[in-house]
Image 1 (tube, rainbow, N blue to C red):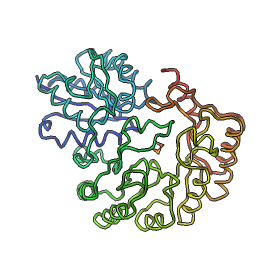
Image 2 (tube, protein in one colour):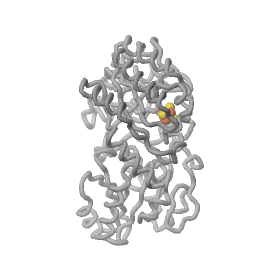
Image 3 (cartoon, protein in one colour):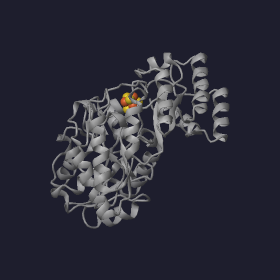
Length: 414
Ligand code: SF4
């Protein structure tokens, strides 16, 4: 019996992260006979039914913060179906700690960007070929695990941004990769320093289809730094950015959200001219600005390549251009002394007085980031008090308590 089904375990928090992957699979003519489903709830019944008709692959996209849940689900699936199902893991944790996922029981792990290699994996499984011959796929007998940077980078335009057929239609990733190397961030490890953009024609074509076939009324663009669209990531390319926004809004008539959470902008990219232009096209009222610390010393340590003052300037410019600035701040960063903590707290007060809202995070040693071996961030009493006070005034959002405990778990996995 050939490969009958791919069951992609989707979770409500990661459903959209698999949209592009499933889009790539559903548009590969070699794979159209494979039944692909992505249930949010239990997958047991789907496996049972699939096994009656052929072989079944179960795939999990694993973020480092979800490891406990994934491990539990893997054990449940194995306990019930044993080796009758093939299990593969992908996603950020697969790229940074593939051996760990093989150790907990996955048969295969997909390292790096999935659009191309996952298609190949399915074709190999369907044709009884060894999938570990595909660069980026490792299995129980593999001894060498490549880093994502050693693998071929995906050209976004070659693949759909989402899966229209499967009705998993989410935000459009318009930019992948980041030339900056902030030490708390895993993006440079996972997607590399070479910035790639989805072309205007591709974005427009897919969104027109989503409007026509799925009744799309709005879309979110994803980017590590929204204002870098069209260039190499180190400076803005206003004409290219305007071409994207103008064409998409004119051709589709839908609301475009760009530069708001979960995307953000780097402070030094923010200028009045640029925001005036962006404001003409986008529907978001908020602009997400990554400042991260109120201490220049810590920004330097973290390799941020901007100053605190540039962050303050960006907030003022954003506010004057008609956006509500939402500022990302990370508490508990490595190497902070009391003065640095106080500087961040003081900065939060100033930013709120300027009309901003704070998006608070606690430092987590993310696998793949340069600071993956640093101790997880802990909030001191004064920080907790300020966050509580700002929360009561609805001036701060974030899950700092949850991130504090997740950070400790990540540390434990070292
Ligand atoms: S935090 Fe942003 S700018 Fe820094 S490396 Fe990550 S994606 Fe790039």
